[in-house]
Image (cartoon, rainbow, N blue to C red):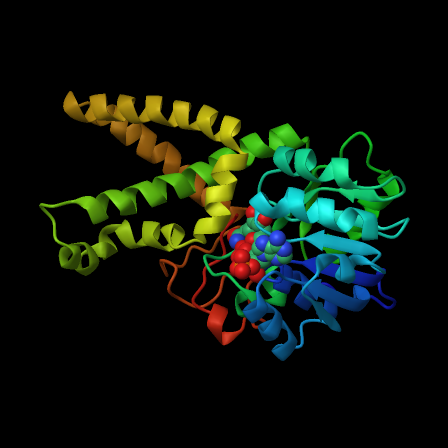
Length: 329
Ligand code: NAP
């Protein structure tokens, strides 16, 4: 685990949207002494109350403009569909020299929605911590969520390099491994590694739910056959994932096209009894699983999402978040 900073990296941190990711950032900032003070804002009264009860911030606001007014770093942690309105609202309240960043799961749409609303003298460093769980809200967050996980920064040609460096230091202090990427490339990579897998999970669970010849109770009873792994992913937040698909449309459709072609090839192989083709693919995919474990992004333990924490979720996960198995968002 990263050592706490001697002096905070930022004077005041403002987190807009104190859900799973926003509250994890607030917790990590506290734990690693990354900000002198923390202000949060959220549209949900219940979440604001929870944030105050959990002691996640020094100040909790209903109006995002009030939270960002004196902030040196502003982290946008709302669903993707809310970015444009939030950016338009806070733009006039940002102080000169502030850095605005975010955690959105797609980057081209965030740049499109946020950049036009930021005044001159404010730096914009889009980012995406590739870490998450299927839970939502302030109680679901935990400081160790980002430990050992990648955080991808996608600065634009206009981004001040000094601001990007400060963001890199912030995420490194949270325990993340930081990488730079072109926004378009980010969206393609995440389409295949995160967005399409979520769509497949939503689809397979939906199909099982619609079946008439297999009963609900049988689906639940025999779920250990692989289905329950999909249900964990398909339990992810509906608002967040609706917005991901609406905002990363091109990349998801491109990857879905490839996926569909490959699925039809598999269908043919099964129909024509081409066992070698099936065996070769399954051998190749097994090696990918091994590579992910070797890279420290997963453990080999067969807990199917129900066991204790991941190698990095660790002791800081609150009881409510314990059953959650980290995943990328
Ligand atoms: P979450 O737990 O639902 O938190 C989002 C919070 O923002 C909620 O409290 C929500 O309130 C609030 N909110 C919504 N609209 C708002 C507005 N206009 N102004 C102020 N607050 C508003 O969601 P999350 O999982 O933390 O996701 C937040 C962002 O992180 C998304 O952009 C997502 O793409 C990204 N991300 C998520 C994951 C993941 O695995 N979950 C991983 C990486 C990145 P209500 O609940 O009342 O709407």
